[in-house]
Length: 629
Image 1 (cartoon, rainbow, N blue to C red):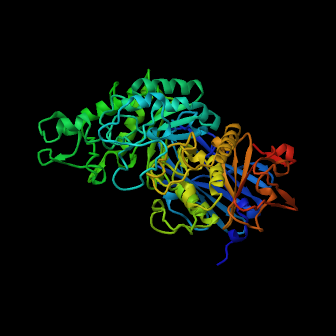
Image 2 (cartoon, one colour):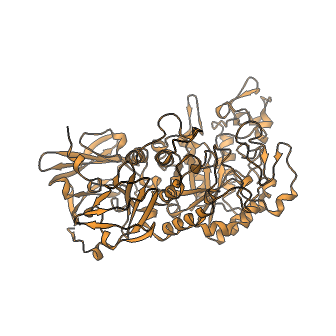
Image 3 (cartoon, one colour):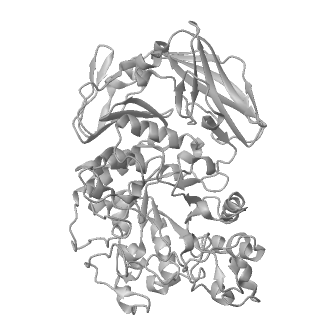
């Protein structure tokens, strides 16, 4: 059966999300009255009634009919008030038209059939991320590969390592991958802070800096000091101090799931059942056997049933979580490695409790810190803001974008994408993004990390069609969430897997690179910095086809229109009513033009391009606005 929605342009679909345009109170408390708005275009039909179906203490209730509060540019804005009865609440909109047809609007989109509660919009009382988080531009650094300072030459190669020259090829797999040692250090990062500042970076994320027996340092032998090979505590203090002077935050990487076998706690208890540290791990067979991360023997798993471990690691005033946020280190937060597995094993699940404890410990020291949890799978329904402020996940942004730009002519497969299809359309990209972003409350969505690649996966450029990196980078900076530049992206580096992507930065052209990307990232970072709609604005898709998507980010101050093209789409148009201010649009990137023909707007469709416009305010566009309340 043909639906009315099939004929309704996407840009005229009813819309709501958790942004301030639609939810006035962005930090609700228990008992607060919450105003919820929805916009409905006249093209849908004459509206008879609008209601919200919301949850209270596990039961669902419909509200009285919504009030019409504003008419603007063909859109009617309706408002409903609900009470924040519980810390978590979910809701959806019900739209009934005069002709008897009806629709449901939830976080995944519009439907004529009633939908499961799990796909509702979500709101909660846990918004505690620092104000700077939503506008951050993150830069990820793997210390061994970023830069060598003169101090690095003073350090002897450790006994576990294989010394490499900066221009040597990275070992991609097999023996030596974790042992190859290029000798980058923290002083080297400090020396290149001007590079990061010029790039538009506002937040540096350091992978582990603690002593270990590998180049990645996820197998910590201590959490009490910075690895002397990286310059020790002094180097970190100087880096953070220098970064702060330039307006750049610095966060660290902490493994709350495991330590290394060389860790002092593990060594004290291994094969020693009577040791007090025995309770820190999952030992058996007289402490000869133990559980570890995916069975990797060098990464023994922490047992969070231990109250003493919790005190030393999280809750104590001198705990690991707290110590590095205090002076003289003054770091600005943590990214928690494999956060999805922390506190989980067999029938034990302390995951929720632990993330809350970590956040509480951080806030006792400094409420202006951020906490991000790594989640290699779908993070949506498990990251709601009680602990982690946002997720480092690949499902709501990275993988859909990879699949849209994937080069099917690659002889090597990108194992990162897993099983299933590697190539999708732009329409499917939009649906995939909405499917995986739907489960996040808005405040979490704004603090999710949006990488094209990281130290754990192949480089985006290596597996996508030519020119895709430039276009996809623009998407990073214009989607909700924090854009993540993995060190080397700005040099157009390649990498066939996670190990190969950990390529030393070619400061002196030690390896092939593409410095043209430097200016691209600078331009996108500048646009993001200067336009607040890209920090917290709503996300509304206006058009989607196989080859092109268009979306708008809107807040109370401005609207930013983005058109992304993979290939040609001569039918790419949006209704003039879909967004106000088209006639006064000012192109910020791409050089494309918007052509108004009657009630339609023709979009530029140059293959492999991205265009970004700042739209005129409605008043300057001549749009009629009638405020009813």
